[in-house]
Length: 261
Image (cartoon, rainbow, N blue to C red; front, top):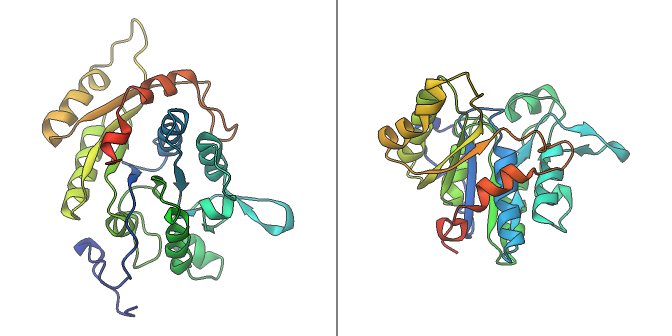
């Protein structure tokens, strides 16, 4: 592996070994907190409940809690495992974990560590060896650094999975979503489409931005709006709960076709 630092925005992945190919999807977000864990879990649940068992994978998680034996436990990994009815250990689903709720490279530095990139590569390769499709939940947005050199976009490019972009509904989301689409396409990634998450327009309180944003994103980004998922109070990552509203919206999409399965 090269010790020179590539220009991250060149999206060059030649410094890292090739990863094995699999069917699946890479779920990213326009920002942290848009609900990509919920959407990734809902996609996995849709496939699993429809008779298509899948693996779930998150390369690295920060903001983890301390469990027994000093282990760090990711709530995202627990949620993904529950949605996919996975028998994998949480360490197999999220091989690298940090306590600080920061970008992984900063969380690692503050812990006096280097991000174990090889553990991510090895974990992913082992997970897909059984031949099942995989739903990968990315880290932050596409340009979130995992290490100083390896960003989420680089990992997505190495995995070569179609990308599902999770976006928020309100004012400002056109810019954030089009920037994410542009970054994905500049890196050579196939954008499967966009999921608008936490969509809420209250009766008697029109929100023109929220109402018109999906059509604007589709037209200006040349991309499919795969699903518009409403705000669902029954859904909780910490409670491993996936609400009926989220399930219904996600179940309308032909996910096997999008991931080439």
